[in-house]
Length: 634
Image 1 (cartoon, rainbow, N blue to C red):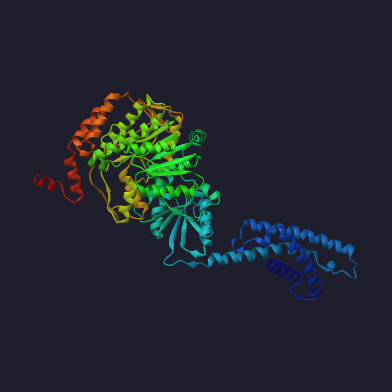
Image 2: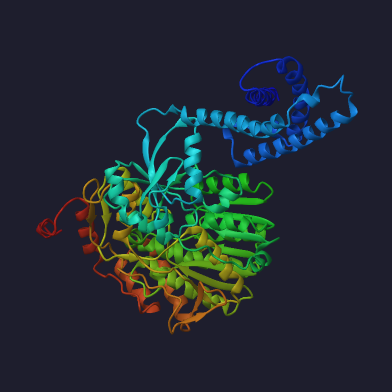
């Protein structure tokens, strides 16, 4: 209020001074001081009612300017009314208000606006231009996108109390914006020129200030900058900004999810809510990548209780703590349990009587399962059968098994054991009141043991990044998307179906490696090399997973299909599975392959596995094929 009163006083004094020809005369003690009291009383009341005293001047903006103009006009009108009233109500020998020139009151309208805006602007400029520079050299920043987000980002960077960035310019594909200036910073060119501009201006970091940019647009910018040794960042999404949770200036690093991510999944949340709300849900493998995300997704639908089963104690501990923090009202029962232990599984089912089971527990690492095939048999086949039989025995309504694209024409022990698990629960579905369904999908981004965390570790160690084959391709899906579609597919199942999720287009692993090296601010072939190590046992170049084709039937959801599988021989499956379980602990790879082929004839087993395994181990030790063949035989 005192600051405003001082500004009002200065503005009125300047108006009187200009009106008197820049001379101070008798108007000052008699007319100015008397009229100043009236002016201050009126303006302080008006500006107070307009909440102008609560403004933070260092963040002065257009709304503040409009408030000042509005207050000045209202005050001037009131003052004119008082001035005219004084002419009639106050005797001439007593009044002095009539001596106030009308020109002074009109000039005061403009002067008040100019003085208040000038002071606020000066304070804002002071804070924006006098930064404390962060330790070290300022990061030279190039902003991609000269739109609203880019303008807000630049403004917030300029307001930072501690300067971390030096904004070099904008990049925008709109030709009308070329050479335009925003807060003194120019639009330097289009995205096609971004690499050259970054090199000429010695840019350290590029911020993609396009919250609504598609994954393809972000990938294009990254690809145009390959080999430029740059760091890449982006601003939060529009929903987060609009909700007020984050500011545009809270930039984050671009990660591989931004390049490989897909459009948001559209779900029938009403069906999922009816499927889950108020029910006891049991999740096996609850601490794994998929299992833990299933816990998060299901918890949002307010189940009666979550029963978490996990063999790895640390993983179970982590997801339990997270759920307890985020969903404090949720009843959670957690248990360490090996699903191959049937009495233990039965005890948990008998105790909690779950109504829905999400079976995510499995051994999924292809090369490791080739080394220890018996463990894949025990966990993926026996473990699934134990959980499925418990679901049947204790009256579970719905059983959802999470499978893999590697079960399609399998070339690995892991894929073939998952295929046998699918066949087993389909057979059980024929005579059970429980609805048993399977959901297949491919790789998920960032899951434990997947290629992306491995690449990150290799890049952090300075390389090289290892890729098994230059033509290796894989499907990728985000963990939340996969979990959401699993729940959607589960609501559609009536028992016996194998649902397949639409994984989009496959991605070349070598391209993924190049993108991750570029995103990390390194140059492929200069800072970090890519090495090809050869295919590992059980791997195939292309995964087979599509929701289109003669063997697929559509569902009402565009990203979910149903695989038209052929009937299975239950007696053959049961007899062969018993034989597999009998020899599981001996690890006889050749015998296990022969038995699997009796049930899954399309499985192409690597019967000369030990030779391939020896060669693979030798490559890891830096030996050449000549060294391997020169070894003396055992």
